[in-house]
Amino acid sequence: MTPKVKDAAGPGVVGKGVKTLAAGAGVALTGTLVGRSIDVVRQVAVARLLGPEAFGLYAIGWTVLRIVGVLATLGMHNGAIHYGTSYQDKDNAGFKGLLFQSLGLTFVASVLAGMGQFLAAPWLAQQVFHDPALVSVLRWFAVAFPLLAGLRVAAGITRISKRMRFAVYTEEIIPPAVGLAFFLLLYQFGSRLQGAVVASVLALAVAVAAALYYVIRLFPEAVKAPLKLRTPPKELLAFSLPTALAAMSGLFIYRVDRLFIGYFHTPADVGIYQAASQFSTTFALIVNGFNAILAPMIADLYHRRDMEQLEELFRVSTKWALYVSLPLFLVIFFIPGDVMSVVYGGEYAGGSWPLFILTIGQFVNVAVGAVGFLLIMTGRPNHWFLISAAMTVVNVALNWLLIPRLGMTGAALATTIAVSGLFLIGLFHVRHVIRVWPYDHRYLKGSAAAAAAAVALALLRLARLDSPAHNVVISTAAAGLVFAIMLLLLKLDSEDREFIRMIQSRIGLA
Image 1: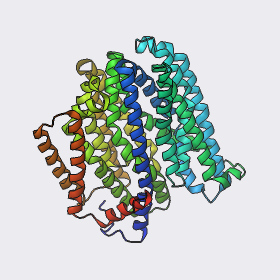
Image 2: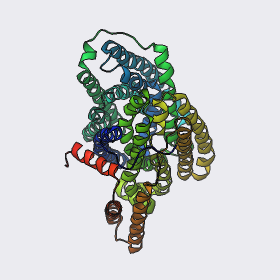
Image 3: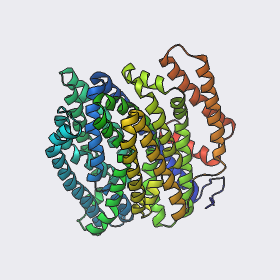
Image 4: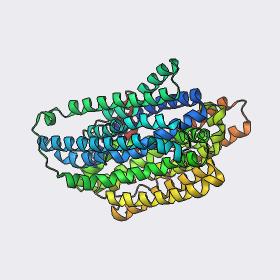
């Protein structure tokens, strides 16, 4: 479907939508940038102080928590947003019932999942990963299941207000900041691997407490209202559970490679690969900054059948997620080895090829936009689940075939093929069933700016700078400056200028 929106995003419906998106994305992106920066510091500290082998054991435990923990939410964060947008400010009693259902069902499911992992820890450690030291790691992370699931749902509920800072505080900033502080404290007392695990669990406890506080603060009238279950639990589960299965499949695609490396190779290989994989997922966090505000807006617009504005927001959010990411994409494409050595240390330089390959998959993720959220929030969670499940099967098969032969490079290839397939299939499915499309001729300006930045990096590479650190710093600065200058010279579209003004005002730069 060809976009119906004209170049000028004036005051009207579309202009208002772009302003709301910019305001929310400004907060989400700023918070994501701050939180990701803290998390990079935390992960680098853990990786450097523990070394690849212990960091690999930590990575296995954290990966199992994240994959299974997503299913333990039962998708209630998505269900709360989908149904909550119709209850908010209209039916406080029904809204309160929805909140209690979402949090209560999540708590029960996550406790059961944690108990299952606690009991299965010896078998997993010895029979699957062949390292008894993993038992205590898995058992400590089992305690975190209710915390992680509760945080996800409570933070999702705060997004219904479209005031993004509360979800940003609890999901992006508090966990890495508190986790880093606890880890450094415990490390000083001689607790190394166990200290890293305990610090992560304590950080989640602080974050979920903050998220629940913000829910009460944001919706005081609903908290005071009598509790009415307007949405039958069966209906809520029927909508939410497929989104959890889809999210689990997505995380499985992103993270199961580490478990396969742990099965076929050593914990040290897992540690090196974990470092490369975590750095590549920086881009997923950027696009999630846009998606976080888009999710309630998509649900609201779809309920009102305002497809014109929905398509416009899809296009603007996709374009700007790509613009924000492109300079760093180019740096990794040109100097992945220097990036790994500078950020994580010489022990992790072997992760350069995995980082390069994984970044290609993340480029596809950013370039197609919020296709998963579009399918979920327009009432098609089963569609996204089926696509995710198919790509999960492809990913598992490729990991099983490639990792024994190619090691970490095989894992990166398997993940990149599956991630690219997931989002490309999702993109064309969205075009077919929802009739929206994020691309038009205005992307040509970004393409020209990216080409100019790539030329600048190629010339710098020929110059052969004297150290990896200098190379990374100068290359990053050059890519960002050339890309931004070229965009300005080519003249931004009116909606882009409005988008930038709103973000500047939102973060206090205007």
